[in-house]
View 1 (cartoon, helix red, strand yellow):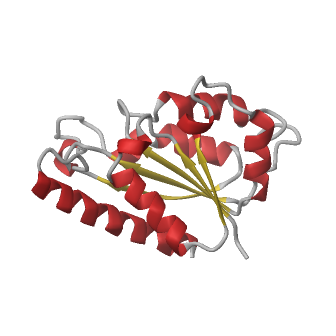
View 2 (tube, helix red, strand yellow):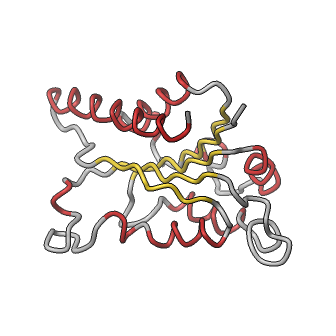
View 3 (cartoon, one colour):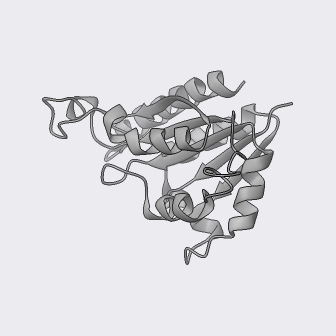
Length: 180
């Protein structure tokens, strides 16, 4: 049976709407999973490298779940990438521990889809912003699966909350098709 590792990198996960719904839906529908909420596990960024590497080795599917943060990943996830995906473990000589594992980026953004076009406010697509993560996965010999992302995931009013919840459930369903 396949094991899924969900790495959550949300600076305020307890108050999240979309990311919590996505993760809760995954947990409710996947039999074998492990969840590492980086901000809760490592509030001072003192990441347990061995624990994280052991979890990666056990996983068949690896999901990065995070809110899109200034055109990138949140700081805790960047720190995690820098110190966990090391030479000799994830890449380089002898660094084949992640070879063949499925890797999926799952992210949410408060900005509408129209902003992520060449003629939009951000001038680039989500896929273009995610190239460094894609290259990291390739360097680590993982199978990079097309990212799952959702736009306009901030709710300012109650009626927006309903829409965000529904979009988060749809987002989770897209993820589930990739790891089932």
